[in-house]
Image (cartoon, rainbow, N blue to C red; front, side, top):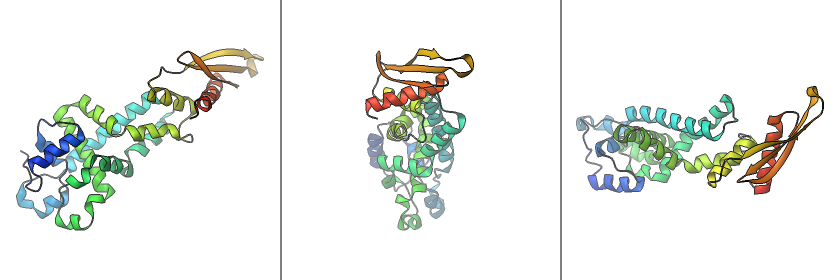
Length: 238
């Protein structure tokens, strides 16, 4: 049984739920997600659990949600590239940024020592609070609700990936731009193929919503598609 800590009254929980845009059937899960271990260590008689177990659960959930989104958004990236992008999104600094945007720092229940040591602004504490919040939401509301919440909270970080040309190839960037603007997926068409079989040159065009935005040539269709996507991105000014 979870026990509410006296340092976080029910009105504060209600305020936080409004800020999060999410209602918990069991608000005690939400509160536990914000209890730092320093509070439990200093107040052993409170019978309050820390957020560490929920943090463990939330970490796995966030990684899974982000991995699925990247897999769908960037079909041309290999395993190593996808892993690199996922790591950039689920690292402590990024999750702490997300926690700050939700105002979680002011709601974390800390021990006095951690409080005086600036614990509300420590990236590790903020990231842990967000992870624990996601774990609590999974237990309270299920997978679909939690997935939607993670994607909503991290939409800016996900969108910023399209601006990283060194991390994402042009085709994937163009795919992301189309999705961000609620347009249909880019369509690549073979315009021509010339030369002998052992040294062919391919020309590919790319269309977006029926309009040709770029073309590219290459010694393989994949190379030509990437160059066509680059031309389309230049045409779009991205």
